[in-house]
Image (cartoon, rainbow, N blue to C red; front, top):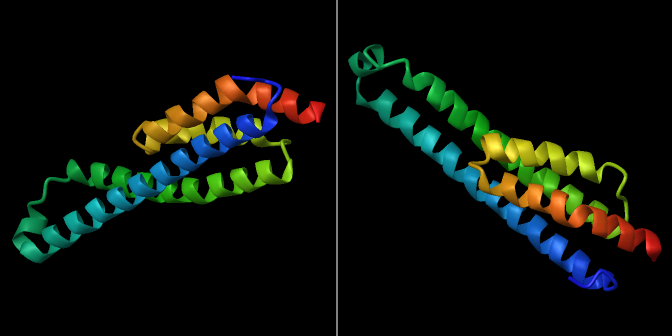
Length: 134
C-alpha cells in the first residue's frame, strides 16, 4: 500500500470497518432470531415439553441472546468509530478497535473480530502516521 496516499488508506480502513459493522448486524439479527424462534417453538409445543426441556440448552440460548445483543451494539459502536475517523478523532480508536475485536471474536462468531484485529494490527500505525503528517 502506498503510505503517501492517505485517501486510499482511509478508504480501505472505512471499507473494512463497514464490513465488520455489517457482519456484526447480520450476526446479531441471525442470533436473536434463532433465539426467539427457539423460545417460541418450545413454549408453544406444550407445557409438559417445557417442563421436561433439557436445561443444558438454556445456557446456549442465553449465550445466543447475549451474542446477538452485543453484536447489534457492536454495529452501532462501529458506526461511531467510523464517524470518529471521518472527523479526525483518533484518541480512543486503538482501544475501541481492540475491545470490539475481542468481543467480535467471542460474541460475533469470529469474522467481525478478525476484520477489526486486521485493521488494528495492519493499518492503525500507518493511519496515525499519515494523518499526523497532514
